[in-house]
Length: 561
Image: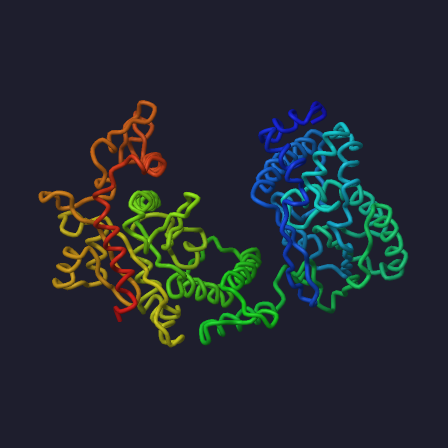
């Protein structure tokens, strides 16, 4: 970065056009590129969040990536592996921060007053000019400070603020660490939260002197201590570090879990719940469950566990996941056998958006809005619901694990149970899409699934005619039309015309078989990306029957009791 001398050099370094940089700095001006939000805090106060507009956000993201990479290289080259800072650091979190202070005789919590606003434009500019690892010239340092500051300080809400704050705080951290070692204390910092801990039984004798020394360091570093949040915690009482209990093991406070469980119960029974006396969102509740279970998984050996062997906390999260995903799904949910199928269907919808306004619309700016969701397989679905990342088994397990009662899932709250518990019908349909292989002589997924759900001859005829049937509750099975009379089975790729299937990429031909990849062929992943990128020029006419079936399910669902 020392070689960056001009505005053009800087623009090239972060990967933006000079015109874009000039416009933001001198025409639009940075202070006009933010919107402010007031977020309520637990103590009744509010926190001001400054949100950069789209253009500035992109530039800040690019700058963040460059600064972060450069800073990591500096630390590697100089063998600087500080374990002090845990906030906004790679591979660190509130858990790693708390772990340092686990099972200690004394824990001291300190808090910096108005953390980000304490770091002003001058401090940012001066840091990049004077720091030995940067030594940026004055003009470039000014530009960097302009891009990262709002109304003269680091804004809470910009992606660059935490990184720059950690850089500037590094000197303070080193000074504080010296004091901590003097008093035989472990020290970590998570953003503006400073934590010290020790098993030294004589620490109380030095506590006041320690506080005075720390206050002086903090003040010399350009910060102020928030005295109201200073806490000395003893081992015979609850010790908390960044919201986690650290007495014996890392855990979530009991009242946090109990409140979360009560919120979920209120949601199931009443359709709403309160957080701090305001109606909460389902995303907020999911965040609480996710946090609880993150800590739970940290403390247990989950290598041999599955959805049938969960503890009480995990079962509550499992229950919520079934509710949110399959019962109270905010949009009709489409579940396919493979991930590439999703891109095919999305591409077809974009091609025929004018004919299926229930499924997709196109905005004036050219962007598409899907009115259906596509199930994204994640690790949590495998662990809590036995839904593997790919394949038809996922679809089968959704039915057998989340919808119907069996000997295996008798202790699981199914969608049908929620229907009784909540007293209302499911919000939107869940649509399972299979390859059309029901009459094949081979043991195909659809044929196996039809046997699993025990469909009768009448239902099979209806499936052949309408391409969908209602399985139970809000769960539907859907497939696509055979594209010729002789065919007894068809995969979704067979819906594409020959010229698309024969498209070559770098001299390689498409193959549906994984075993042929890297031998003059490419597979489904590359093919789906090609289809999605070139949807405007591709013939999706064989997809119309599938899209029409999905549309019909959604249109008729409110009346299909």
